[in-house]
Length: 162
Image (cartoon, rainbow, N blue to C red; front, side, top):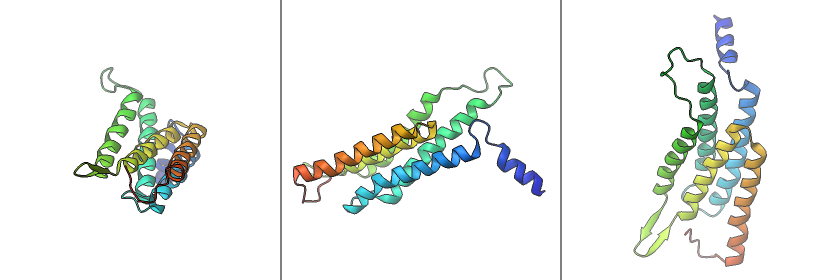
């Protein structure tokens, strides 16, 4: 039985070896945390945990898609391989979550930047899942620069999140 468990845990990674999957998921955690930390530091509705979970989920969905693409088809119509669907599904799921962070008070809208940050965390997670960690890191640095620098340049002391 222990051999079965060991084999099951180590051989199920058909497209992405276990160490690679761990690395990509870990990068998604770190980069998602950086975006979430900025939101958390300014007491926004979705913070550290939310952004980390979004990045991990997006990365995980990508890794799952890679494994599905490796499956051998027994029936020519049983498995349709289209990696773009993963991106669409993650984008739609994150959009649903992000929409929940947007609140309107008459003509005033709050939570748009937090929603955009959640969307960004999803994109970063997808990027990590595909193995393009450098691109994910560059995008995270750019996102943080936008969030921090524009806050300073615009003199945002109101706590607004439009």
